[in-house]
Image (cartoon, rainbow over all chains, first blue to last red; front, side, top):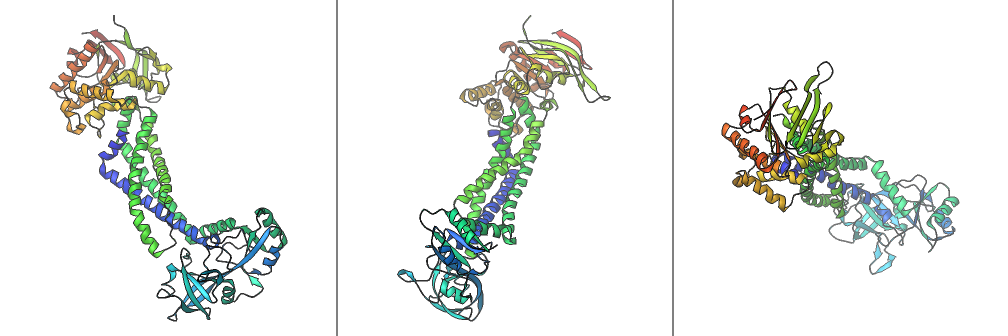
Length: 373
Length: 229
């Protein structure tokens, strides 16, 4: 495809403009993709950090952050369902966190039984993974400064006017809500959020070995009313779907990622079409010389793909430091290594789509045109 | 009488729609022998270029038939006509039609690339053709750095690379000065005589008569004269 390369290399200004357009598109797709992915992961992070097989929630609950109270005895009822091994509880609510300087910060307090998951942040007693410290809190390291606890730990604070102590930091639990997650035991958590003794918010269910998850799910639904039962994966996906589709933030991020694709499509289409029309008589000559439609398609798509590769590489070079910079202020922005590779496919698709109009124009040209001076 | 490799039989072509229809060719029959350079002359609008387009399989007649190297063009589909053009016919254009982004060498090699034959053999042939045509030191120059005569010689080399039996040239010297025009005329006549190619040249220029073995004159789409020189 020398002709493709020579055609675009011949007009370097246009090539540069096209490559820059694609670079912007690639940057937008990767950057917004990172934000979207990070947003998705963050929106179900708490659910995914548990080891539970099933989650029992109040009827209609869409995500972890907006629960409703359910009866605490659901745990005992669940125990009686065939296939259930054991249950645990989690509660959460936005509460006031009083910093050491006396100022307040709204935080999402999460209280959980100690066995909800090995990855779940919990104020364990040092050296004993089964013992929980009383009145103890764990905060994500990305929120240490916001909560004014960066200088030293442990540190005495107040949660909902009750004494508490930040004893440890965790990582990977940065909140996308603007209110940091603060983790504690279920006993302390339910006390801090003033949950009534007969209430809880989420009941987590573990299955006996060999039990059918769908059978147990149906058994729990049959025994209880006004609740929903989800597998962990279902609840995780439901939460992600909720945050992406039902909130302006998620929608905006998704739209921006798609916009990147369409901006790139428009830029490449315009540039490739202009190049094709500028060289339309050369395509007539090619046809007269015996070039097949396939050859002409390859030339035009080749031009678009060369531009795409240039824009993609430049886009990657620009995006990596930008994402690192973004992560400094928005820790939940995800930057998995596979994302840039995954964006290569839509970039390629963008270039091929962009060539379609140009290919049609070039194939429609009359080869007999070559005889007109 | 040498065998005809190229023939048009009772061909008619009209352009435009009813009411404004123009008859570009009207029942023209011609055949072209191997090893001869035929000059087609006539005033503007006489149908010369239309005839050349028919002979080059770039156009199909409204009636009549065109036969290229034994193949009845009307019976071929678009893809087969493209194959026929690529393998049997070389084109030389008034406006050269060189690819502005390619060097002289790459312009010649484009026909090999189109045919999927970009190999050492064709590369050597392209170089030899350009050298024979006096362009040995211009291989890597782009068209804008070449004179009109040099551009046309590159176009001739490009047309010759696939080793076609037929060469169709449309006003090949119209954009050239007298000296360059004479050089192109000599090259094409030699190609006909020494390499036994069938060459059809369309031109307004009477000087071509001195290079042609035969002169055909068209007027208003009809054959006015057909004489051997």
